Length: 364
Image 1 (cartoon, rainbow, N blue to C red):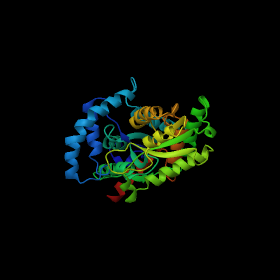
Image 2 (cartoon, one colour; image 1 turned 60 degrees about the vertical axis):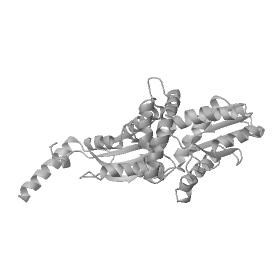
Image 3 (tube, rainbow, N blue to C red; image 1 turned 90 degrees about the vertical axis):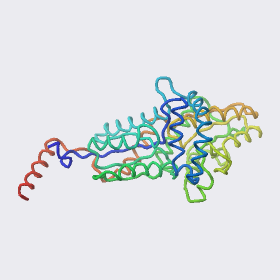
Image 4 (cartoon, one colour; image 1 turned 120 degrees about the vertical axis):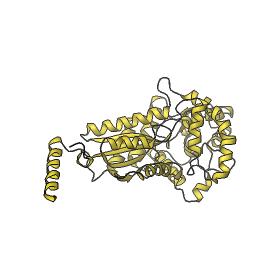
């Protein structure tokens, strides 16, 4: 019975998609990761011929070693990459939540760049009987540079399959109520464990999102608008007034104009104007990574303190917050409606096999 792939139990799968991470905080591993990442035409929209020389002649030789040193700072002892650790944990917890609800749903994680590769994970799910696939990116705000690129890679793999699964995509969830509630819970937990900002004295709550070149917005990428909406909804859910919270954009690269306001210059400006405390959070990153732990938690702190600020508090990303797993589950269930979340029993499979054999005999 198991020799015929059409007579095995069919399963539903949820695939979490994330960007990726170097396999180690060493120049060689970082160079391989950056080359894969920065060679994606969705990420860098410069003519390929020109960009090849810039990437291989300037960026990779210089940035690989510098970035490796930064990765070494945030690398978790015995656990490795924070992004990988927390992304895997999120997939594990989501799978367990489905199981506790009595569902049989395959849940796995694939990275756009590096390992586990999208192709290897998809092939693994196929071997387990996947017939229905929900793609759930760990990018709450849609961008062609992240979400679309991850979808592209899935489509590339599936293009070679003779028997493709039924497919559904989660484009974005930047304004999903469960996601906003998880963000609010993360911020409030930080404030409850320490102290709340005193907004009457000029303290500020900053929400830093990853930046993109401004031309992406002008070409129709909705990312900027979705970040602003997430920021507004989170600010409102925390009971904050406009002006008490700010939305900024980090990780600017190159000389071209990127989405504004820039995080670094905003923090410097606040410090110079006399703001004594900043609480900063990265709602667009479900898992801590280099951009949050090194750039925001460390580099931005130095900028704030060097220009007169006194109290800089970084709020960790959602990571393994149970409210975040609840949000992922709610988002997945919304998009899984109408699909079977279980598998046929052995007796049911046996009966289906018998009916198929009978049909074949009658046909003959």
